[in-house]
Image (cartoon, rainbow over all chains, first blue to last red; front, side, top):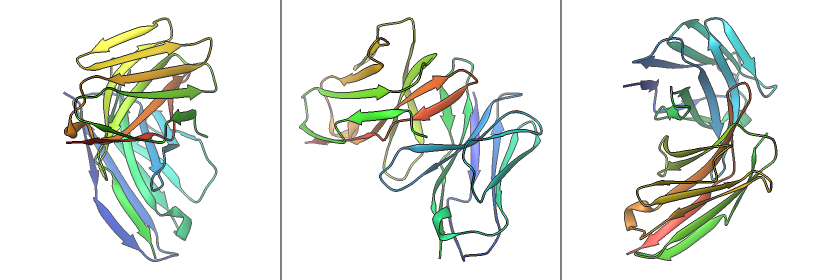
Length: 111
Length: 110
C-alpha cells in the first residue's frame, strides 16, 4: 500500500530563517505529489504539485518553492521565512483510484 | 484559490442522529471527494464520486452530486461520537488538481 512520510511534526523557526520540509513516499512509483497549507480552522490551499522528477507547478505566488529531486521525494523550501508562512503543511499523493493519501503534516510556527 | 463553500460551517448533533453536510463548487470537475480530518492530523479519504455519477454509498456514508447545480452533499447516518471531526469536500479538476472547500466541523455528542 502507498504510504507518505512527512517530518518533522512540529517546527518553530525565527523570521528570516530558511526552511526545508521533506516528504517521501513508498509503495508507488511516479506518483503525482502535492504540497498543501492549512491555516487554523480553514480548508487546504494547494501550493505546489508535481507530476514527475523536476516538474513543479506553482499554484500561488509566495515565499516558498518546491523541488522533486527523486521520484519519491518532494521538498518544500524557503530561503527566508515570513510570519505569514506559519501554518499546517501537508504532503499528499494521488492514488491509482484518484483518492489522495495525505501525510501527517508539519505544524510550522514562524516567530 | 478554494474550490467552493461548505454548509454548515459547524454542526452539532446527538449520537444516533444523521448528519448532512453540503458543498458547492465553482469550476467543472472530474470527480468530487470527501475527506475527514481529526484535530491537528492529516486528512483521510472517505469517498469519491465521479462527475457522471449522482449518488454513491459506502457503509454509513452517502454522497450525492448535482453537476447542474455544482453541489454535493455528504450524509453520515447513525452518527457516533467517534465521527466528531472536520469534513472537507474537494473537487478534482483537469490536470489532477484537487482543491478544497473550507470544511464543516461536526460534533457528535454522546
